[in-house]
Length: 35
Figure 1 (cartoon, rainbow, N blue to C red):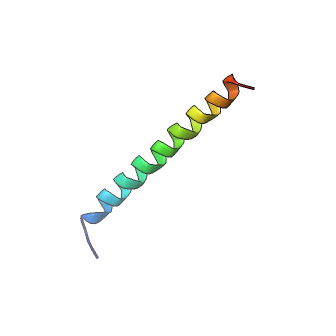
Figure 2: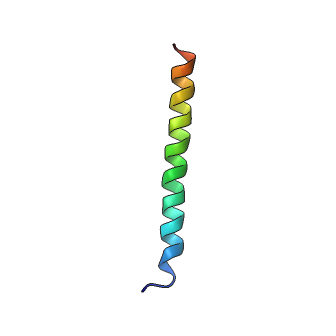
């Protein structure tokens, strides 16, 4: 098992999910502005 690798995995997942979350929110706001 790689001991120090999980920090990078967790950080990568956090960045990916954070980006997807922000994209979804911005997309929802954009659609809400233009009914």
